[in-house]
Every structure is written in structure tokens, then in C-alpha cells.
Image (cartoon, rainbow, N blue to C red):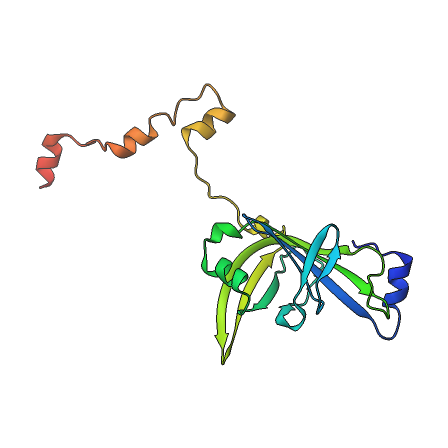
Length: 194
């Protein structure tokens, strides 16, 4: 649950509210700091690049259950550095942390208090799309509950079995049995079948 300061709550209760979202994407080689403002903002020791109307964020959906709701970030394809990530290695982003903060602004467009985390998850898929003359890069991020859906397969090998039961040697011969199939029927019986 997000806790707001009294100044932030007062600003959000006004008839006209200005909000800036800060998005932190931890790629393998570097961390990207982006914000929804039209200008870059310095906060938390980082320069948050203002994308303004060049970017979009899908609505955050909440549910009463534990189902996973994804969040989608969209950037204009004109961003060359992000375009290089989109067509590059998926290990650059997949499974890495993504975090979104938000903070209200006052009438002078200054931050009211410290931005608070409103969403966190992991980066999952990135796609490039072209719609007419414009193109976009879509980054789909999932919450930590998404990992619960992807249970590992029920494979068992000798090392896993020995970690649980050190004296059990039943699976030590499994790879040899698979690699070298044996004839189970006698030659005499096999001749009688043919």
C-alpha cells in the first residue's frame, strides 16, 4: 500500500491535479530513468529523461484475488537507444526489475514531497509495431505474482534426488538406461513373433 504525505494528499484533493510518473527500468547493461514530464527532472541522484507525449503507460488494474495484471509501457520508435534494445538480445531486459513512482506537482510544477512507489514488477516482452506513419515500442511488464503461474516442470534428476535423499541411488543409472536401450525379450521369443 502506498503511503502519501499530508502535503501530497492535499495536492491530490485539489480540483486540478498534476502528476508525474517516474519509471526505472533495470536493463542488463544500464538502468534507464524515464519520466512523463515534458522536461528532464533530477531526483534521487538521477536525471530522469522527460518523454512527455512520446511515451504512454497502460492503466494499473487492481483485483481482489492474486491474479497477475500486467503493465505496458509504450515509447515512440524514434528513441534510438530503446529501439536498439527492442531488436537486441532478450536477456538485456527479460526478467529484470521495473519500478514506477509517482508524485503530484504544485502550481509551479515542482515536486510535492518525495515520489512514492506505485507499481513494481519485472520486464517480460518487448515488441515493435508500426501503425501508419508512426511506430512504437511496447514493453510489457508483469508483477511478481506472474511468476506463480510459471511453475517449473516436474523433472527429476539424480542430483535433485540425492539432495533430498542422500543414500538413494535409484536415479544414478537413469541416463545410462536412456542412452543404451536394452533388449528385454529373448531372441527366441522375438523370432516367434516375426
